[in-house]
Image 1: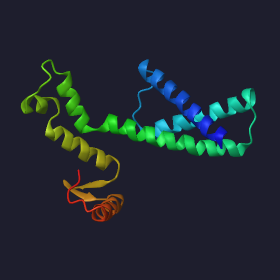
Image 2 (image 1 turned 30 degrees about the vertical axis):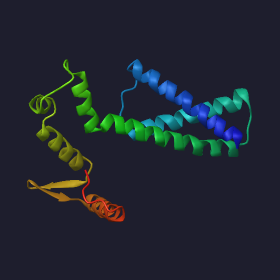
Image 3 (image 1 turned 45 degrees about the vertical axis):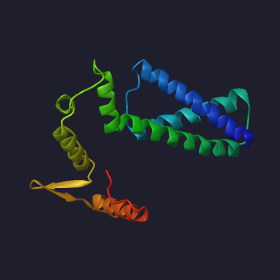
Image 4 (image 1 turned 90 degrees about the vertical axis):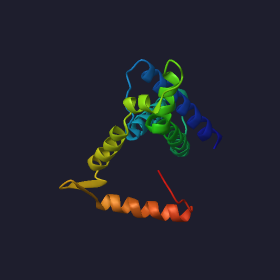
Length: 165
């Protein structure tokens, strides 16, 4: 158990270091969580095989348990990474912070990120991902979108949330 925990932490920190270095030298630019997860898993398997061959042989069960821990760390990392990279609120705060006087009027902010631009990009993305269907300039939920709505309503009712998004 100790080996699995320690090995997963070590593997994750090596992956994280490698990911940051690749991003800093612009060799890795993807924001796709699927691509990041695939890269993390590939990296884990390379480290596991290398460690098993050259350093210390361990039964496969220990590596499987370690993989579960590693996936937990990867999911936590993805939540942080995607939250930072996709958050509109953080982008707005960043723009204000990067401005010369550390302040922006609503007009200046709207020039940088127009409300229409956010809205239409979001709608186009939902059409592209088959959440919505454009039917003669009328938007309709796809079956995938309808399922998401039902799931969302369930969780809104469950947690007693009146407004979301």
